Amino acid sequence: MKKHLFIPAVVAVSGLCGCSFDFGDNYYVGDYFPEVAGENYAQYEENPFVSTAEQPVSTFSVDADGGSFANVRRILNQGTMPPKYAVRIEEFLNYFTFDYPAPSGEENLAVNAEMSTCPWHEGHHVLRLGIRGKDLDDTQQRHSNYVFLIDVSGSMYEDLPILKEGFCRLMDSLSEDDFVSIVVYAGADKVILGSTPVSDANRAMIKSRIRSMEAGGSTAGAAGIKTAYELAQENFIEGGNNRIILGSDGDFNVGMSSVEALKELISTKRDSGIYLTTLGVGYGNYNDAMMEQLADCGDGTYEYIDSPEEIERVFVENFSRFFPAADDVKIQVSFNPEAVGSYRLIGYENRTLENDDFEDDGKDAGEIGSGQTITALYELILNPDVNQGASYLTFDVRYKKPGQSESRPVSLDLKDAPAAWEDASENMRFALSVGTFGLILRQSEYRGDASYSLVYDLGRDACSFDPYGHRSRFFSMVDKAEAIGGR
Image: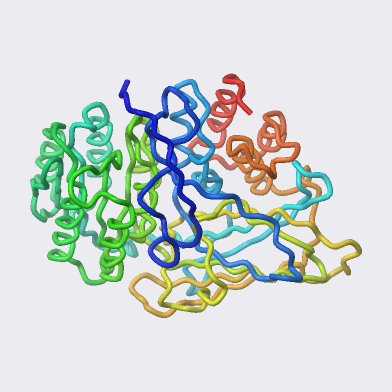
């Protein structure tokens, strides 16, 4: 087990990465748990209830990451409860694929919404918002220029093997029209493979290069990032999928190493059309804050690899998500004050935007991959005696088709009266189950009557849509948390 000093540090977070907030150079280590001491998590406070009379409009960027869920699963499997700041409920929800309607016509996104009673707070209600990206077929998945950026520093000694296996599995999914470069970094960065077409002959050679990597030395991550962007730019495919995939424990300790400095570097590259996806591994010195924020700034997604099963999910089952269906996706909800008294966005604390940012096409926001679904929950306090047929809210989304600079609007007006949660759709009940679990682990001050038994009651019969078994396996994670006996 890795040993590290436990030095608590606290930093406040608000707003969207690279655009409107100061993340600072320090991180929250968390309550002392033997297996997570020394790990770095950004601290943020939960979104409060907001009066619609004072602020009827809520605006935020989508977050397509799933890293928090897999990382928390790893901590639970090590036999301890996670520090609360490791829990980002939006990433718990968006780890799962929901059975949402696909877009039609010329749109790359489709939206849906539903309300039910709130299972953890009697008298309140919950709003579920859903988005689904277009399923891009083989002819629509653009030729790719990948740069694999792999941390081979000494802190990666135990974790490099699972990362190497992941990149080798990814190689099996690539087509002969794709190109791959490989950059490694420890005390310095090194290009071990220039841009190479993924022919059948080259595929085995590239895998051999990946498997031959060994860990050792310090961590010059910033130098590796700069080199990776240079390679991606040199081999840029116009109209293609140009993407850096960074695999690391986030422990950058040579050269530029603060989150703010690295965010600034990556933010300057974002407009070049090169995406940055981050894959986290490891424990003990793991820097979740670094990996999550770098992906946000790089217009990519953040995942955590804790098992061979997670390799399969990220690199095979969800391979299509490496192809963007929509860029700069923003959500704006306009509540009707006559129907909704107050609201609280659950999660997305570091994704909030100013309302004026919604129609600003220069404002950065999150991407959605091919076939990917996004889910968000609001807890609502409805006004009594709402007129039948009245609009509760308008759900607006703006997004850009990849390669385009002008955003497109999609809108939905919700007038359907809320159902009892027991009668809600499976999508709603499973989202409520995951959300309830997140509120418990987050030690939320808004968790009300949330309990492990409620998590089971909400989700056990909401698993008929479960193509890879992730919904069913979710309850093993709940069992683990309950057995540990926390919260």
